[in-house]
Amino acid sequence: MRIVAVTACPTGIAHTYMAAEQLERTARALGHEIKVETQGAMGIENELSEEDVSRADVVLFAVGIEVERGERFEGARVVRVAVQDAIKNPRGVFEKLQG
View 1 (tube, rainbow, N blue to C red):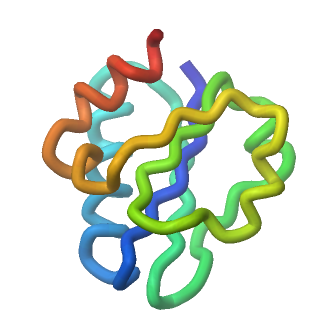
View 2: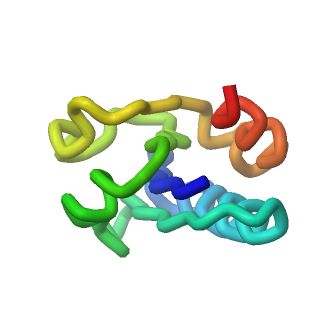
View 3: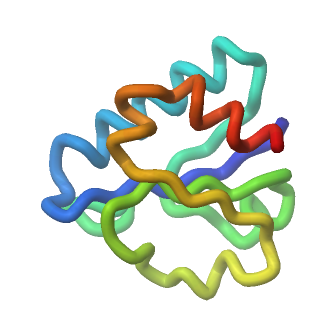
């Protein structure tokens, strides 16, 4: 599965990056392709392109706040989970993407 994700937490520091790392690690282990954009204290990093989004099978928002520039994802299949779920139970998050 080809996945693009956005991680963001209210303070934009630790949880944003911890969630990104867990999603990337778990995606690799499960044989998925993933690109993760972080929206943290440093702003948008590793920004997803229009092509990234259009090629994705699913868009994952692992967030505790609103996604910046969310209009980029209109028309895409979006699954939203809590940022803590991506950190504590990333395999469970990927199970949700399958459904």
